[in-house]
Length: 147
Image (cartoon, rainbow, N blue to C red; front, top):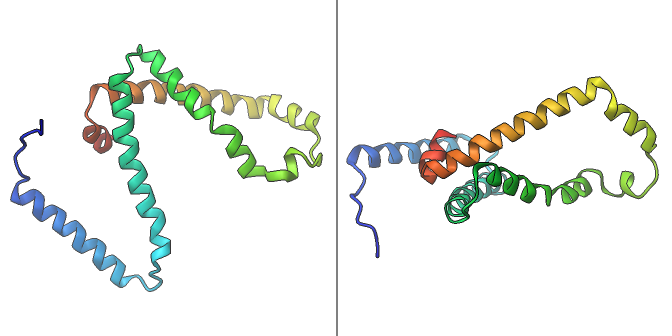
């Protein structure tokens, strides 16, 4: 059954109209306006809308504990790592044999590199924990505005 909601107030509609006029004004004033350059902006808006609604649906329908949501989220993100490595390095460093694996291992094990990486991992898990639990507690719109 469709939800019965009130229509937006005139102030809300006026605010949206002002935003649209500002966006159109920016586009007119931009000397190098090319529609293909704005395609990335539209792609971002589309993926963000899909992301917010889809993740909200997942966190409400998949009954996991708070840490289960974090592990689920990070496991899904981990699936994208090989594609990212291939896109970043291509064939030059993966199969070409042009990089000394020992030097990379030694560099990554140094305290100057390991400390920020470890701190980054801890902060990423904390952000994931609070983010997933906020998504579970808040509506998709509220989380987007908060975000």
